[in-house]
Length: 253
Image 1 (tube, one colour):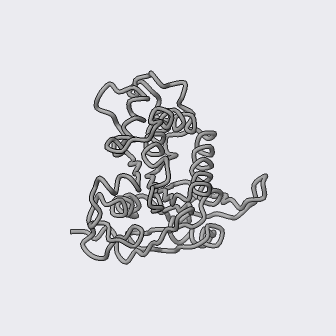
Image 2 (cartoon, helix red, strand yellow):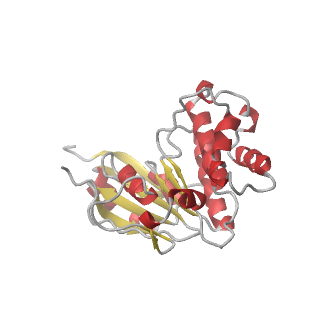
Image 3 (cartoon, helix red, strand yellow):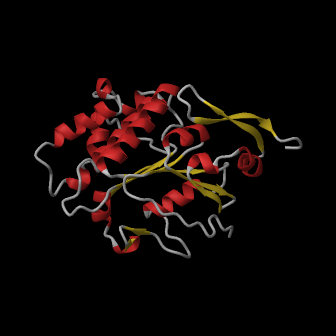
């Protein structure tokens, strides 16, 4: 069998936004599923808050980490409100005094309040993605009583979004990370979004870690040439933030 990940070392801190980057087939979604506890690695281990992930019961894990997969299709005629309320299911044995308020606040944060009674399957891809983001935010909305950090794992959360909502979504989760102390790890394809919103990046190439560190130091034209086989140069956007201007594939690719 092919080795999908090999020797990948990653440590995310509470309050930090991390981005996993790499070409198609590099192992990004596989890594996220391993970190989420959805796939068990053949070697190595995943720890959350210092505890081995397999030692944490699924019900307990759902209280401290939420996962937004790539495929968020809904098999039933659920409304947007129904979907977001599913995020509160792990709290059913110990609900807060304002469960409905959490659902409303999460929908407002992701700009889907006006869609509350719409059937999810009737929405555009971007609207559906924002409804699902509201669900995972609602899942870990409040700090845990014992002070354990919360974690948000997002697999390509901006893929279906228009330009405005890409920036709004990542600005929202970064602000949430800072204010709430939530550790956010997102698989992204857009390197410029990672440059703008991530504190740390991990670049995968064929299942191995090609580079990691602060985005501006890691995402260089030389790295893009080596990993993505594209030519690029660094420019500054209107806010003075570094951005990459991609010029096209390398000759011979």
